[in-house]
Length: 268
Image 1: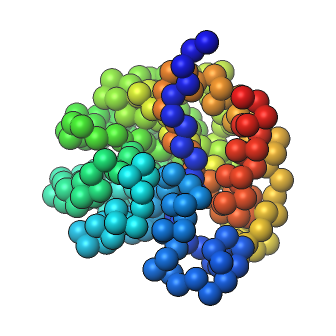
Image 2: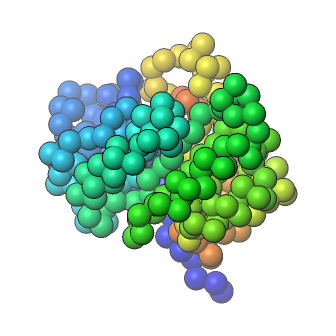
């Protein structure tokens, strides 16, 4: 029997409106949230780094509040991926990597999350990859990077091969206007690094019509998660897996993780 690699499942961010009382005990101080979170999960995708590079003291605080085995995955700041779109951002990127390196062994993948680009920004996927390629060549060694695109027509074997060439993981996402994981695997091999990075995102605009308080499941994702369980089983003898549930996927990130683990355990 093939050896299984490590599979880490957590949520996108460790705080949200509605989590106090539904996940965190009522009355718990926000300063205690991360310590409590780390007693339930072994990884988190930090969303706040998307908005700005954290301070060294913040990074040190994250490390101090979590056990030795805990892993932080961090979004690369939007200044790099959305505002400058990889142009003249070497200093900002270098500073980000330097600061978050303070996590030491707790630093997991860093996610380059790109938006949907219309034709006014890039006429073709080839134009985007022409800009991406030199950036990938300059990535510092000794770190894990994942990359997410939201232009489904750009997601092809050539793009996957570019990421594979540089050891960058293609972020496999479950998101409203992107192909399902079954559709992706039918078209390309989505494993482009020595780990797989998964994000359960859902339909942000659609779910926010119904709620903006993330205290309970409001969308049944069981059928979709069963497909993800099958995908994980197909790859976890080859690579480590990092997977994160956003509140917008079903309404309550912790509940999505709990459901996935229930389904995963049944199939083991």
